Image (tube, rainbow, N blue to C red):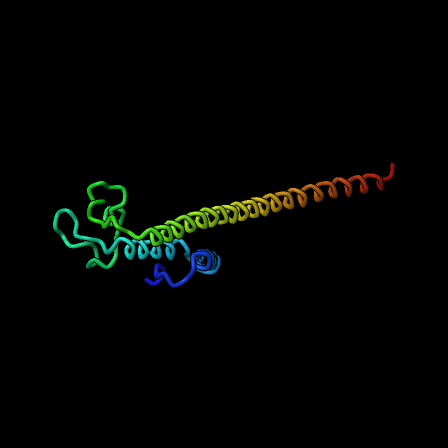
Length: 159
C-alpha cells in the first residue's frame, strides 16, 4: 500500500487523506466495510503480515489477511512481542490519523443513519395518524348529514 510512502509533504498528505475519507463516506454504498478493509491493510503494511498463531497453525487465509483482533495482535500482551517495535514515527502518526478520522466519520455516518430511520418512522407514524384522522372525519360528517336529512324530513311533515 502506497499510503505510507513519504512522497508528499505532511500538510498535503493529511488534507488529501482527510478528503479521500470524506469522499468514501459520501459516495460508497457501504463505507463501514471499505474503511474496515482499508484499516486492516494499513495495519498490515505498518506492522507486517499476520504471523503464525501460538498453536503453530498457519494464519487465516494463507497469511493474506487478518480475521479478527486476535490475529492482529490487538489487546493482547503476548502478541505484542511478535510485532516490530521500531515503527517509523511518521508512518505511525499517519496510521493513527487515518484511524481517528475514520472513527469520527463513522460516528457521523451512524448518526445520519439513525436520523434517517427516525425520519422514516416519523413519516410512517404521521401517515398512519393522517389515515386514522381521515377515516374519523369521513365517518363523522356522514352521521351529521343523516341527522340533518332527518331534521329536514321532520320539518317538512305537516303538523
